[in-house]
Amino acid sequence: MSEEEGGFVPAEWRIDRLEAKQDVERAGGALLPEQYDGALVGIAASPFKDCIFALYSLESLRNGLMILDGMTEEGAEDFVCYNIVGVATEEEGPLFMVPVED
Image 1 (cartoon, rainbow, N blue to C red):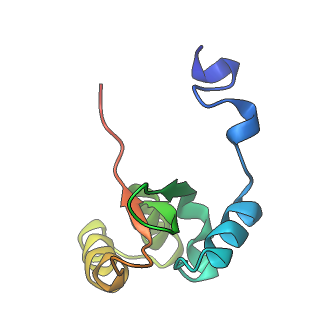
Image 2 (cartoon, rainbow, N blue to C red):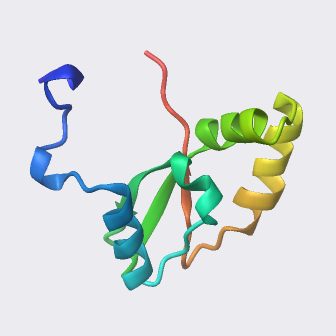
């Protein structure tokens, strides 16, 4: 199945952003402030922890800071590394993803 046909995830497994945030909060996971909601790409669960983690796109976080806050690419990357990723916890998250290239 192609992404145009609905992706590789069954439709019944998909949730909207608000539902994802509510699931993470109920499970005791950490969310970034609302200004970063556009970078929230999903949720992740671990069979080793009793928690649901928010999953954010590092690329979207960086791009959002460059567009909305006028940061340079280097400045946005530094900000994301030190002020967002750097304060995430192992117990609560959130988690961050980087897309793979073909």
